[in-house]
Image 1 (cartoon, rainbow, N blue to C red):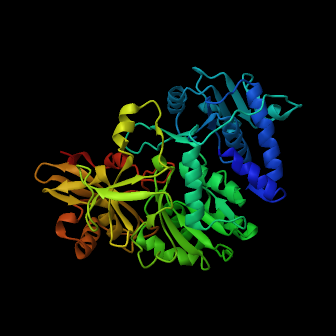
Image 2: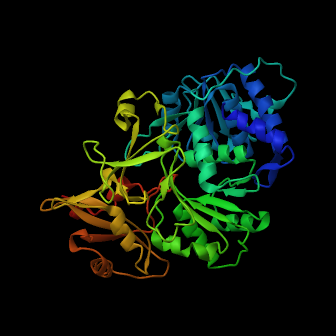
Length: 506
């Protein structure tokens, strides 16, 4: 089986059901399949073959969905690119994945590098076509007679998805059709998805979680609504207008919706499933979700691109009773906590979170050393520090590399950040370690205050001392208008260090 077969099966079951909605446009599963079949034939006619890497540079759109499924159908490798990158970054990634073709939205054509390396084709989506590009609509003109699609198996590559690169250069995660199929099954079971779902997908399709969910929506015959760009008010409008039943977003997006919702009233009672993922959600935000979605059950997902991305899920039954957990492993996933020597630790002990299963990536593309370091004896080393309780629930304390060692004692940033966000004046917060001559490292907090709120460094530190051991409290507090985040809404801690005044650095 391959990913494209999901669409074939669903189109036969629900031909006239709306598949995708985006920017006021709608398309049924029957029409979506027709266009994808036509596009797959056109791409083969253009010389795009099985195993060919094809990049996609676009905002969320129906075209994006058509392209990725057409590539899956002919066994080509889809490479979604982050449209927030620079032209230099795009050039580097195109060269690394050896892309032979690029689909680019006209609004993003300035990101296309002038020296196109191995690119044989550029297909332009939308108006204002450059002369060197083939208009996307042209691929659907006329009747095309093309060879039948080649057999595509579960162990064939499906996508190369580049990691966000919060601490270093992005790596290309090579996922197979089998990886994506198992991730689909994991998500479907974890979230009890069905053809009755109308899900709002406001996160970008170049992110592994959103792309994986699209395959899951199609597998289940759900209707999904794509937002070209995230806007909290627009999302609330869509929920009310389309009677959305489910939504999956990053925690910061829910925070933004909570802020907007305080200035107006929207009917969100249709929403029955609310899912958070991509980064840890604070207990404070979790408790406020009922303000947004009074009739919903809440889920918290933990995952990473290398795992397809789903690893664990916290379901509504445990969402508030184990509010600090990210749940238990998904259907096909095993999880264990290991020490520096890869020995498994018993419950309650902090170590690195390791996982394995058929959803785990095949490799980092063209990086054998990194692959060997990340996947050892079948276990994916996530780089996240955490622990498991006696009932198998997973708790994350931070990135392994972000652990602060002060005076020989480990300090987990997540614990300090959780306390900081409980301060009534704090909107957002992150903690980093800065070199210190005496202690080795010291704790520095970067804090975003709520609008119109005033607070001093002494008040923040004093609050922490009420709730934390003294050695865990920030030595200093830096106030910022916002935290630097990547496209997955994860805090970029290397960027935070640039906010630390020179006098605080050794």
